[in-house]
Image 1 (cartoon, rainbow, N blue to C red):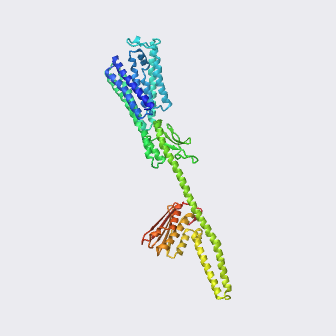
Image 2 (tube, rainbow, N blue to C red; image 1 turned 30 degrees about the vertical axis):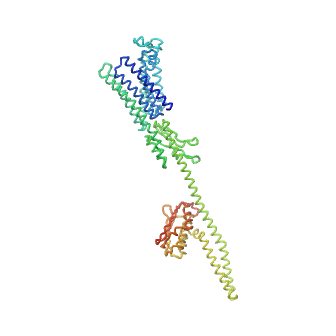
Image 3 (cartoon, helix red, strand yellow; image 1 turned 90 degrees about the vertical axis):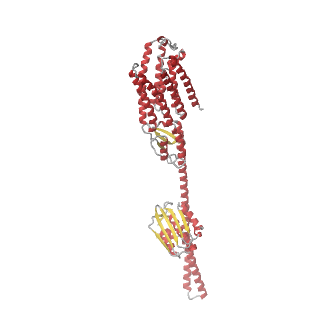
Length: 583
């Protein structure tokens, strides 16, 4: 049992003992009808029991403690009926003990704490009037002299009826001022609060107004009117029901804490700040709730920066912090956020979402950097291919061409002046050199075709189809500008697919299609060959699949016996930086 709970239980036990004593004192006094005795006892007991229930459901809400104190105060007011001088004198000081406690309870409801300086001022004023002004008249009234049979007033200084009457006349207007101020405060609170708070608060105010109306009617009827007793009985019954409305309001608000805890299950799935705001508002029955966040790229991110500042009647409650700075808060007019348990529970949930968003931001950043690094590797590989192709073309190939030209000129000059065997040897050397030049040209074209860089993707693929020994057609709509890495990858997909067809398929026709749509380049190569499982493997296709994935694309191969082979590649057009745009 917590210290707070122990205090509430001790106060409730004291109220029970004091209530039993009050019943005995009222019965002994003989001036109170038994019905009044039972209703008075029932009203005090109702406040104590309702307070225990409310405190059990919401221990951080002081409304339960205040209800127990109201019950204790109601019973303490009957101590002035005691024949014992000490108890009687204490009863005089506590003659209005329940009034400031009721004011405190109403000014604090439903959060259990006064929510403004005005509310605190009303509560302080009620205590000053009840325990200050009222007690100021006690030393000037000799109750034993006025009412024979009453015990001695131990605080009596001098019997001055005028002073006592003046104090009594002061209590009524002071109480009226406090009552009007309290009603205005409650009216303002009802108009400013959300529906989730207006319902319990409105019920409490409605019952209080009903009781006040019955009391006013009874006073206007006068003590001699036959209907006054019935009206007073109705008033006391309503007063007995009043604590039930307080307890119901606290219990109504209490599930909000458990509801926030239930959000832990709801946010296991990815949850945006907007969705979290809706969930919090639904669980807390606070549609006015606004969730705001602060985010600085230079620091650990929290919720996205939604800006926003507290409006009229709103308060800012920070739910999560990072390195001493707020990263998430709510703006609300609801007194729910007076409950530290709600703040802790909501802060846990919002903190989890903020951490998840931070981690997702980090993961997205790392993934984006990883993708960029893969694209850079592809671009570097293509750049190296182009360099090797240029070196072969401008270096070895040009030298071999020069040698071939020299041999051709030598044959022409020596024609008819050399032996036939030597002439045949020169011719064979020239032919072998031409063959080597062709093979070197094919090798350079396979490493990186110059036509791809100079003319673009469509002419390069068309060149492949024209050199293919199997009839091949190329279909290409108007393509947009393509990043160099995308164009090179598409070209090598077509080249490798055609090579596989020539090696394995035994096809009689090949169809190549290039389409750019919805920000993606789709490359398809189909043949009418036999198709086989070996068409889906091979290091060439595996390497191409990895290259396509490096550009955030996808390579799909379908090949079956007798059904031909189809190779699809889908490559995002924005997968690589457009260092060199080709078509």
